Amino acid sequence: MNRKQFLRWLGLGGAGLAAGLGYSKVKSKPGEDALSFCRTSSGVDPSLSRSNTPARVPGSIGGNSYGSMVHPPNLIGSDFLSRMELHSALPSAPSGSTFKTEINIVEMPLMVAHETFVNAWTFDGIVPGKILRAREGQRMEILFRNHSNHPHSIHFHGSHDPQEDGWEPVVPGGERLYKIQAGPVGFHPYHCHVPPLASHMSKGLYGGFIVDPPGGRPPALEYMLVLSGWDLKETGQNDIYTWNGIAGFYDRFPIKVPVGKKVRLYIANMTEHDPIASFHLHSQTFDVFRTGTRLTPDEHTDVVALGQTERVIVEFTLTKRGRYMFHPHQTRMADRGAMGWIVAV
Image (cartoon, rainbow, N blue to C red; front, side, top):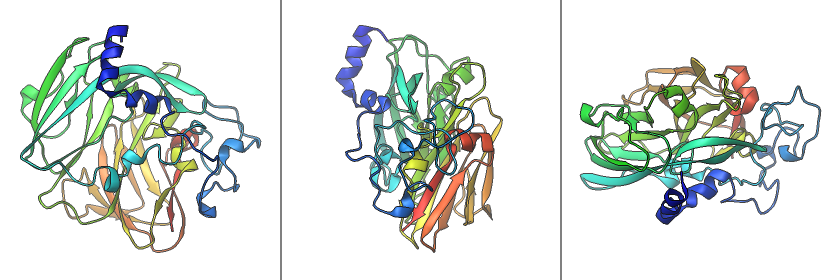
């Protein structure tokens, strides 16, 4: 992005830049956790630990809590990923038969782990891109602007007019208005579809798109968890793994839910370079809604496998107070940033 493009993007609202760099929401008090079992297993902030660890991996800081060897940036606080808490940030689709939104391509440095920056390609300066939510059949108009030095696009999974499929590149400085009708009901990803596809996606160009059924789903606490990897050395192999773009975030800042309240997770595997990943929840089983296209469960389990771009909705209720670990059952992913906790309080 050249200077003119950058200044134009700032005029659109440059909050994404601060968010991407990890400085928009800074903890006022390091280690601030109200509940003792919301802290790491050692009882201290993992950023302060200096215990012995295996060979250092990117993003590590010499010590670790129970699972991940990779930690989030020290400057971010527990509310940094609050936009992924859908029940408060995006509880329902916009009203009306049509809604309009805008998505901008911004290429920028982004902090994804402790002292670890990547040269990211982003939708609006954040990874994953902003969550889109619509009702089945609702018309969506997405104005896409490419403020970068490379061609990009947006491809939506789901059903729509093939003329709006998003595989055609939008040139640097160009724009395109996508018009799609939301459907089918479920959870669908969107991402750039310009070759080389693996490069464009692995640099951060992906997001989540929810299509609600008529009348919505039953009330629940809703969260989106998007798994991805970062190939720091550009060798075709991921070095760290993240839920919602930040390695180790949910290890340091667990998801907190009340005992007895239904929880709904929208989970997507947006990793490149790894053919399969999974989601495993400790001490609890869950209902599985494959792609979310049905309102009745497809199965009941405690681990679900996901191919690349595959997604799932899971629902469960925690009946006892305590810490419930979650992670991919590919242990290398868990060790390198993709281990987290859900705490029932």
